[in-house]
Length: 333
Image (cartoon, rainbow, N blue to C red):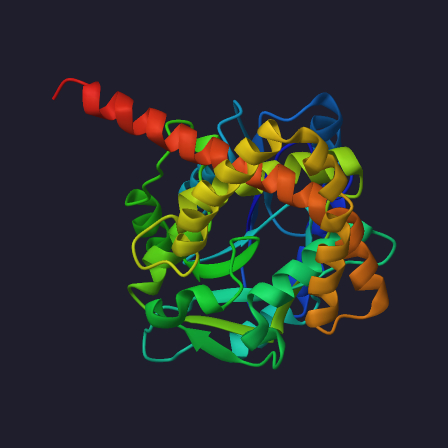
């Protein structure tokens, strides 16, 4: 198991405990847990010092370099042939590893498993908002969650992420070795879509409710906005690529949002008068998606704020990619 952690003292102990429960219910032998501290604060370091597990557990520390770098160091340090990547806000289900073990191929085909992620929405409107977006973006899968697989041809039609992802260590190292981001600072890179897309070139990615986990979203407005903005940045890195399903969306968003900003600057009073329309439009989307009333209200409340923060992140991502490309172009051969 490789668990990157950055400033997450609240859940890391629970995450490790739940991993140990899933291990105990599985036939896997000689497991180990590698936690990589990506330059966390004192509270997180204290929480890491309190970690206890019935299996070997190591904590590796690095200066803050981002989640991709933390995962890579953890995978390099791991000794097993299979590696489970899991994040510090995620609890794997007790029977998830037993399910995977029963479905491991006997012919040597790479065992690539992307977890089915349930978002914990109870008492958290920000989590409820992300849950609506996720289920809408990948509606074909969420209408009928099942044991299936996806390859490059339907890659962008399935939910994916290294939030909880199982793969052979050798395959992960291969994909990490060819990882390429648009950005100079790897902390802003899309650390899962790019990686999984590489793996999908080798073998199909399995997904199933039988291999599932629980994700805990940010639960304050400030953290929601910060996370939303960052997701806009990484969205550009992962999806503004040839053949990607969402590349045309980004390409259309850039000129449309620019024209909208210019129009608002030229006619600020008209823009203010139209502002109340945004929550109604967001709520109407929820109605069109046939979501329950609580989801519709959450979309109406958070939708406009999310759009501004996410859109600003997309623009920041484009700017960062352009700056990095310019620097590379001017660098000596």
